[in-house]
Length: 635
Image (cartoon, rainbow, N blue to C red; front, top):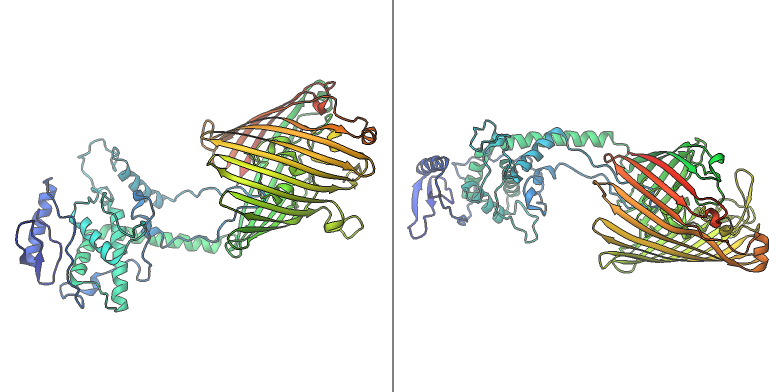
């Protein structure tokens, strides 16, 4: 079929086939020829078309045959749409991107269990319709009307054949795009016309060129659209009038929904999310069965995440729970996220994070400044929140991040390279109390320095950690006097509680290797502890982790933790006398396995079991088995 490439007002210069002279035809002759050509196309004629349109000369004004009112873009003020990088969505997003917006942006929280990822928003019915049309095109084996007969009659405009790169309309739009830049977004700033588009995708591109050329006409600049291009655009607008009208209606719907969301959102600067988990658990063993009962425990959180500049983040977490520890010889069986507020709502976390330049983050903590928060994350696959990671306190993260009893402080994260960062942090215990032995600098404190590498060789995470801490004598809410390193894990002797303040220098190394569907990692930790006026002690701990992301389904997680909880390996005679022993007599193992099953994006069920050999690192104690089923809801 001979195809015209430019359209003039009265007489039209038509590009001839190669080897034939150009000829001038009237507009009526051109339209008659085009109508005959379209009929031949309907008869499935095999026609070879020119791939590019000729460049016509620039005219001053609209031709008489193309009235100005015929150019009707969806929006006279819309900016030129931007194409996504994926060619499968080549033009569709150019319409939706002009009416959708993001209110604020998320900054990764300092505390690893402070925030859960937002649930994906399900598309609306009208959006699903458009997405289904794109899916129909993307799958060549699927008929848009669901019929098994590829030649079945179609009754809807959305079911008509796609626009092929060899069609006149396609080449006309391609020429307009290349000359006026109506659609940009590819690295070479060009519109790629080597694949077919659905009629809705194509209509979005036509609308983009309508907007662009209207802007040029409104600006009255020298770079006006040519008469021939306006005629081409008019024909495209007429041919795709149904699709343009449908897109206009969808844009109106999206604008209305966007306005409704903005008017009824929780806050212009704050996002509300939360989680709640319920755990049924019990201890089994010869020495503990009579002292414990099956329990039903819960913890619930409301998480407020605010941003004032788009780059900072203020985090506030309100929490309530009734998670209490079991009666046991040591501290080995304690749940991650253990919190007992007796149903009272408390402020669990208050922090503010902001960047300094491009290579530093600063975090301020008014509450819950644990060493894991000061370190901006821990190298382990299971410290992803007490509601979703390992069930036990020991399995959640290495004990070195619990050696300091602190809550208020500050930290900085320095990005030395894209993979390596340095974390420095300080926090005090009773920082809000002016009494002697308290305050930000005169009471309990923890000072942490950590060198962390992420994605070394694309598979390795690694950290080297140092903590200097001081823990004085304190009184618990129940009136008990405590001292020593209260990590909430390990044997009683490993806490070095001799009714004396203690100073500790703790060292840790952690690593995690990540492969497809499998991760293996672990840690080792050592604390050199001095009980003031008594003597010194050494405490060691180890852990090996195996993680299986998406095991059996998307969002699932299988986990195994095998390790030695904190164990007193030696002490000076004077300190040993005060403790009752100079070292733990035996070495017990912690073996934990859990499997998180994602029922959907918001609900998980996690069965877990823990086996302790030689509890409290003493073989005189019978083995302990712990079983739990945790159900987590996120919103």
